[in-house]
Amino acid sequence: MNVKPDPAAEWGPFERPLFEDPGARALARVGVVDVGSNSVRLVVFDGAARSPAYFYNEKIMCALGAGLSESGVLNPKGRKRALSALRRFQHLAKGMGLPPLSVVATAAVRDASDGPDFCAEVKRETGLKIWVIDGREEARLSAQGVLLGWPGSYGLVCDIGGSSMELAELQDGRVGKRVTSSLGPLKLRDLPGGRRGRKDHIKQVITELSDKMGRQPDRLFLVGGSWRAIARIDMERRGYPLKVLHEYRMTTQSVRDTLKYIENNDIEKIRNACGLSIARMSLVPYAVDVLARLVRTFKPRDIAISSYGIREGLLYEQMPQRLRNRDPLVESCRFAEAKDARMPGFGKTLYNFVHPLFKSSPDTTKRLLKAACLLHDVSWRAHPDYRAEVCFDNATRANLGGLKHSERIFLGLSLLHRYRNKRQGTQYEELFDLLDEKGQKQAEILGKAMRFGAMLMVSKDGDIGSLKWHPRKKQLTLILPQDIKALYGEVAESRLKALAQLMGATLTVNIKK
Image (spheres, rainbow, N blue to C red):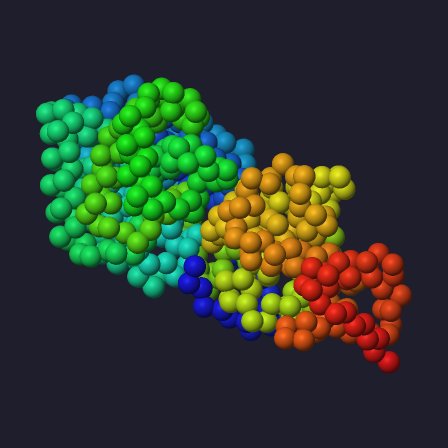
């Protein structure tokens, strides 16, 4: 994340979350359809426009591009399935009361001689207009999808579909150079010459792409179902505990190890262990050869999986710049607070209250502090015996943009400790080690500070006093207004002492006269 903080806009005295802005509200529920070479998918976005949830998400594997390189036309069976899927999606959209669906088609439809006929048939049968985009436009939209989750990103976006693979450069949150190629698994499967011929072809094409794109030593963002399948296999090989693909990180060495793992083990056993479909797994061996050469050629600093791609790029396309500039994590958490908290608006008061404990923390930690304070009360409906675990589960597995896996654990732990003193004995203990010991302690401090601060929650913007923290003296001071002194009862005192003990601090309580 490389988001420039804007305290006046984000936490100023007259802040207004952008999801309340009419321009943003127009994006509150948007449906997009991606007619790909391998699948046809409908996604309906809802919630905070800057970091929307997936209100509806359905994919049908149609394999429109199967056999295209030999026949020159769309796969007849796939064409029938795609038309049936689009009929269904249009009917669903009408039932949901959506504005007109945005429908785009990529490599298979643009390359097939009967692509225009297919688009005309869809228009007659469903009323949907399909926008057939070229490879460079596909690369741009995929890169914008990455920007939806990673504002200010830099690196190389690689989007692999069934019949093509696109590369796009990101610099300072903007899309730069873009290229397209025919390195989709469906086309590679039809190449003559066996695996050796295929690997030679891949090497030649990626060398040409590298000449056009130049050096790309930063992060490699992988977009597309075949990459996500390989990431699932990497998780299985490593015994990785958090099964969230978005922002999952791999190194070049782990990619090499996983490619060997795939080559040396039974494909069907791997498929079952990872929960992959037969259709998806059948393409993995071809994608593996592409990824091996891609990593060897570009030598990225690290590799990140993005679940956001062309569909999210279509949503990003409709956003005003002021919305694009917002932090997707904070906007999403604001929306959750407004929708689910008992006292919307108190998150800001709580943030100001606990902030003195984290004055010297980097901005990356402070944005997590904001997120936690906004989410601190959104799970109040859960049963008290499970509320802490519900909070942790929501934070670590929810559709939240702009969060590394370690940051998900930090957020989850802080919210767990908002409701529970100890974290031992939960079903999530295997996940805690994704965050280092220092981070775990910081998350616990934040959680216990929120646990105490919530005891003073009587109005969203009232004066609940302040905390003062002197790290060198190890002195923690609570300054409490006289008119809310009654709120500082036995339970509140116990929670404050638990916080001070965790920090190794001497505690002082001052009541303002």
